[in-house]
Amino acid sequence: MGLGDRIRAFFSRKSNPALTELEDFAAGRKGLEGFIEPRTPTSPTTLLLVDRYGEHMRAPVREPEDAVAFCERLAIPVYDAKVIGYPKRMREYDKRSKQAAADSLEDDIAELERRLTETPDP
Image (cartoon, rainbow, N blue to C red; front, side, top):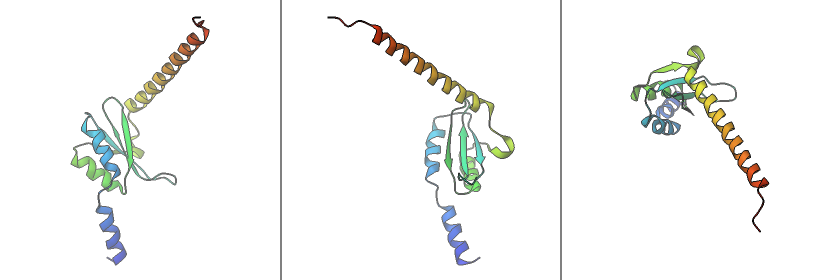
């Protein structure tokens, strides 16, 4: 093993600061599963955590092995997203969130319209 390989190995073992956010996310949730998302030309390798309700959070990881070690330490099952895909509950959570945001926007617009049509007191 050359000097460059040893330096890379040393830094790859250092803690990944983005995983701290995932650890905080995992602390208050049950039914978590981890999904390792492969590196693409535009994004790094990421670890996606999904809870039992479909709420999710992702963070970049240096190596897939870092994601596996993180999930093993917290006793979270981990899968390869490229092979397994994403859970249905995650897609449903996103759909509910978008619908709630649209409903909220409609309520806000209706409230503004009501205020605009009211006549001010003299």
